[in-house]
View 1 (cartoon, rainbow, N blue to C red):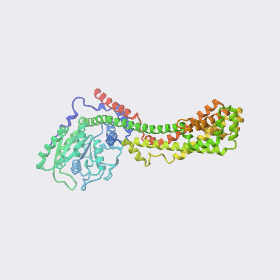
View 2 (cartoon, one colour):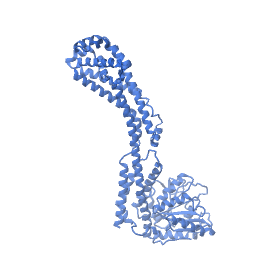
View 3 (cartoon, rainbow, N blue to C red):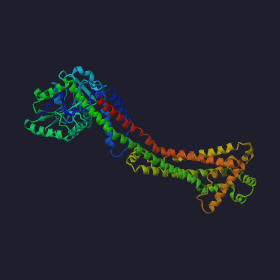
View 4 (tube, rainbow, N blue to C red):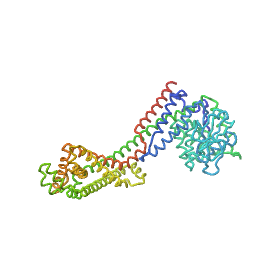
Length: 592
């Protein structure tokens, strides 16, 4: 039951209204395809989310299709038609190729799986068409048999007519994944599939999945039913023909190769493949028919590529959206941490306990509070008499404040890390990123305590510098020297934390009075406006250091997102590139 089409119209699916011609694939189309290739290469899908593995596979297939077949074929429409012989394990592909050529050019596998390089047989006059810069550029060209699947063995044979090349591919259902992947790449680079199956394998699922893809993208396909006993030909061929028709391949020619003796050169008797050889020779000799097959397959590939770009663009946009959410979650966690630290610096927390006690010792508050309402000059005189000779007590206040600030930083940085981790674990993509680090991002970093100590010391140095700089004014030099830099700096730090919110009972009067006393002391030296300016500058300096400290902690999260190299412009750039290809395709059809 061999069905042989008219060579002048080998695949009726390629005929009819609106069929593209070679005019559809000129410079405009080539430029659009190159842009599409660049846009696809720019797509990143690093985040784990439902369906992403399928999109990654699809993206790779599309890039490979453009590199291996579409762009090289558009640049060389006049190149020989490439017929890739593919199919099931043990279907007899290599024996068929050897018989078509007339001598042994490819080695059938006696043991499964067989790992070897694909073999491309061509007419000697067509050798220049198969250089590494054209078809399947990633495969190394060799002129000898090899088991390297990354190599393409080129064989020149006079038996192959000019205008035709035959490529023997690995099994599509090989148990070796590398073989399966290579078979898929080779079939995707074919102008014509010569798909070989057998009476024992024709209903297998894997080959039919390839044939379904071929039907979807209008690839030219011819089916060879091989190794079929004489008494089973009618039954199997009839069933196979029905299966082809039901899957959109009713116009694909069907050839039957009967089971027969194989010579020691791995050849069937020539008459067993006479119909296939005659059909291929007729196709190769008819330039119009050959080009029709090429354009049909090429146009189907391009149409499929443009259709598949939109789901990939959507997936890329979803990646950007999820990365933005993860970034916002981390930002929110650490902004909340900063806010809690700032609140802790303003609500009187730091004036409790040791800091308050050390300040009382330093300033002699009990005695001074009783005269707080007296003239500033008298307060100054009394403070001077108390403060002089107490540099160690000033240092104690500084140390206590340093310890309090560090504990405040550590507590809320730890809380921010926990909140950020909890929010990321709500998404599979966030969980995967957290796992990839190999460290526990739910805890503050090991460097935090050291960085916090440095931040507090640097801020205290800033305050000392502010006081020293402010005291350079000659009008305040005497007062400045009377109180001393350290004493005034401590007083300024107390003023920064002088809000009494959160204090209770006697603490309000003691701490509040102590802070007011420190402010009065500073005003006596620098004046009201200068004190307000100093306090604001010191507060802003401390807030900046807090934000810097928490930003460094947050960077442990954001650096993971930055490393994904996701560009929010990529999805729309891909859609635009796809539309350009579609526009070029339709314009070419109208023009032709």
